[in-house]
Length: 147
Length: 273
Image (cartoon, rainbow over all chains, first blue to last red):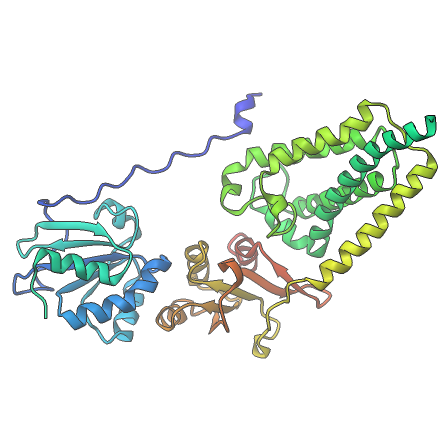
């Protein structure tokens, strides 16, 4: 009997996702959601991440107040996202993606993660944030338009 | 002179026996409180036995721990109990090492769900083996009189411990009257098990669970739609440590707490049947 088979090795953790770098094309067409070619803030969240859940209401308030073009990308189901949008009064478009796309397509290891995407569809910045205020501060530092 | 020497040597045996007895007793007592929960815990791992055998295994472990506790406390079966205890501890350690990955998140729960004794379980078991073997290796045997003293100390200490345990016992949460006989799942959106619970509850099921969810209202609304097979209401307040648990009546109608909520739901909803 092989003694080693009694103590199975723990499987290796999946490869670390690499966030999309500035200058790379963003893997989602935002033009229909921001038709005027403005820079868009994209928030990638999971509804299973308590940090995202805690942050979302503040994010809604902040981007609405500042009139920042915002798109929420969520791994919730379309039905769930429709519920969320309805609850908050449809403040911005919400896009559903599959859980594995968070890592695979958007290179996000930990939600919430944010990208600023230029009107040309090119990534300008990608970052994690602890609060909605951090996201706004970063937007202002870039000098992007706001109210 | 010889008596006094015997007395101080006997102290080593007292200490070792009482410690071993107390450890096995605490371990058994938390499992006796809800043996079904322990069976659910064991069901999470793969065993070379049929599913029905797992309950038998669970009761066997609890029974063995109780016997070991009694034998150490009352100084019975000297010479045999040490061998049995070392065998049991070696078997537990083997289980812990083999399943260390699954246990990394939840701990061993050897002493109930929230005990400090659950930390470093492997080192604890090895230390216990050494402690048990010391008086045996030194050839110390207790006289019947000394055994009686030791047994009395143990029983009195156990009664005090039991009484104190009742006093500081965590109060079970209030059960909403409209939950009826349904199992209640207490869940927080902050819990690391929230995703797993979401997946389990999202599947259509003919067996209803009453869910008390601690979450912002908008999460509650989305989950009310998604968990349509079950009943969902907002929890009165935060769930302690954000650790989910199930409250359910056993066959005798006593309300029991299941820390093994995921295994409970799987079995109850019937995913594994």
